[in-house]
Image: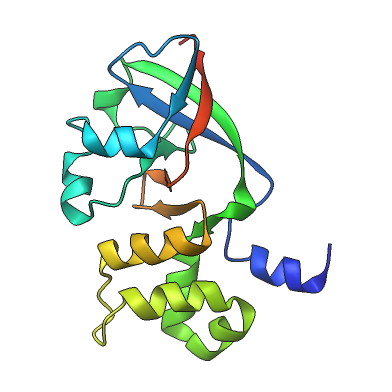
Length: 163
């Protein structure tokens, strides 16, 4: 791997990442999880997220031990995805706040995303962030403190899991 790739990777997830999606509906043994359909019919769990931004996306957990209690009893779907295509928003925001010039050099696309979405007071405009991130990455990762979440902007084929 080239040094440039290692630097870029510091702001994305690494390797193959397992993504877990819960659905109230039984979508069959294999389901195509499509952001366009998901945004048209958001579940009650994601309605608040869609109030922040209408950007079509599908929500995934990255750790089944850290999942909201209300979704656990629903149908579980899982798939692997290339982590290098998922921007680690938490890491990028931290770098942007401490050293924006360094971020601009290390990962110009991540810098553009933060520049378009963080105001002069350091407040994140999630809609702007998601719209801009979708131009450069397939998804974003963030950790709310106890819930590691990925929003994918692209369709993903996932397999139903027995729980």
